Each structure stands twice: as C-alpha cells, then as structure tokens.
Length: 66
Ligand code: SF4
Image (cartoon, helix red, strand yellow):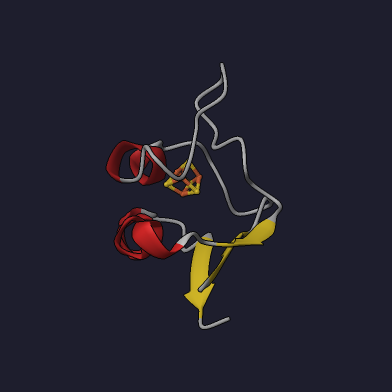
C-alpha cells in the first residue's frame, strides 16, 4: 500500500495523526509532518493508513495498492 499526502490540501486539522499516530506525526503548527510525500506503508499499518485517509476532511490523503 502506498499513501500520499497532498501538501497543498493540508490545512492542519490534525485528524489524520489523531487516528494514525504510529504512521503520521504532527509539527508545531498542527500540520502533518509527512505532507507533500508518498511512501510505502508497513504491513502492520494499513488499517491506520485507511483510517487517516477517511478522517481527513480536505481529502488530502490517498491510498492505493503498491
Ligand atoms: S487531517 Fe488532512 S488536513 Fe488535517 S492535518 Fe491531516 S492531512 Fe492535513
């Protein structure tokens, strides 16, 4: 699974890292640190990635099969 976070869409609601704290981290301003990047999600974190994508009100997070 690949997760992508569109940096220009992230407005810092913080819902993603609240539901996926093993996958995502927040910066001092409340934005997700990993915005603007894509990476392969570790096998044990697929559920967290899906939850983060569902939780983002801006539609900034997408997931797809690797
Ligand atoms: S939930 Fe969406 S808008 Fe909020 S910090 Fe995460 S990626 Fe950004």
